[in-house]
Image (cartoon, rainbow, N blue to C red):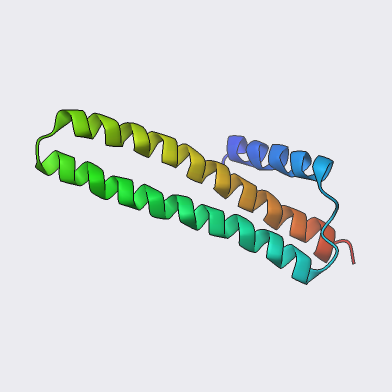
Length: 102
């Protein structure tokens, strides 16, 4: 894992710890991680749909449509990355709060 990615995960973990109480049980931690991974899956699904739209516009030689969908892909990629970082931070928090906290 790159240092920059580790740094982003650590920043998200610290942000979350500043506004949310610790995970008290494995069940609670699982629920929090489940919410984050569901949000990541939703973003990836949207990303896949937009990628299909880009392909349709490539096949139709529609440059204007390609421009729209490439911008959407950029936006969705950033959202998916954000969700992945949030999920990774909650995995770290689970380890810290639930596993090491016992």
